[in-house]
Amino acid sequence: MSTCTTLSHELAEPLTATAATATTWLLVEQSGPWGARALTGSHLDAGVGAALEAAAEGTGVRVALIRRPGRHPDGALAARHEVLVAHTSPADPWVRRGHVADPGELLALDFAALGAGDHGSLGAPHDGGPIALVCTNGRRDRCCALLGRPLAADIAAAGHGEAWEVTHLGGHRFSPTMLVLPHGYAYGRLTAESAKEVLAATAAGRTVPAHSRGRSYWPRPAQAAEQAVRELTAETAADALTLRVSPGGSPWTVDVRHADGRHWRAGVAESFSEPPRPESCGKGPGTPSRMDVVALEAVAR
Image (cartoon, rainbow, N blue to C red; front, side, top):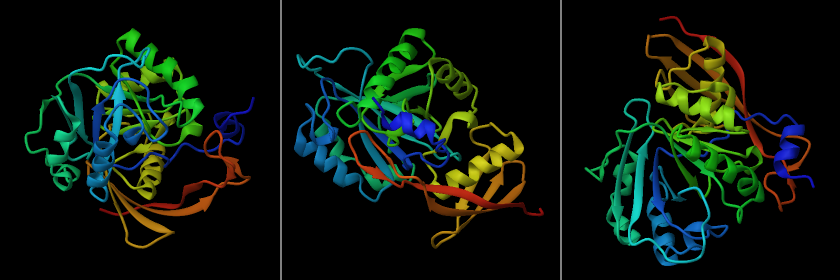
């Protein structure tokens, strides 16, 4: 049976610039089964889930549910919910963690401040290694469950990083997909081996461009420009590059600056993938947006 991931592979659809965009991730532990729209379709109170989603709108914060890998029977629920908050700016990436008895407590957060990188002393700093978030929500797309759940379990068993299942990272057709904190790079079409490579690189402060969908902190035109510069220079240090996208639409001009002073200017154009293909299992054929670097030049210092 054909799946969205099979067709994406066959059509050689690029991974570049397909990461979900978020300056800050707010991740709330919720055990038990998840629905297709997990914030309002799980054991999390639907009113709280909808309110969290509304509070995050336009702030740069993305809210998702997480759970530990393994079986998730519809039984007893945890008395406390672990909460992870991660800001993914290359200037100052951080992860903090804590617990709440009631996720409704999170509605008191200043979401605009969180999106801007101000945690307000929320929780405590995460001082451990990389955190792997693997999309496994089969109610949203079967590929995420079929391919993501075994990957999450393998990472957890191997001890190559802290592993969680997450409700939605976008790009189901690139399953298995994984977001890795603290830097916030998304990866796709992973295997157990390539996922471990990614986690080892993250622990060393590096990214793996060959499997990268982009850094979630950047808008998609910037994700494309960053990938082009990394391929040009073989730079893998996660926080080496900063980007600025010019106002307006396609084609965009993106300035890319290296921490060592080098500077590039990229032209990025939006187009639509042909032939049509389903962006998710169960959906009709579509022509997903793609970002292509059409010009890249070094700028004199």
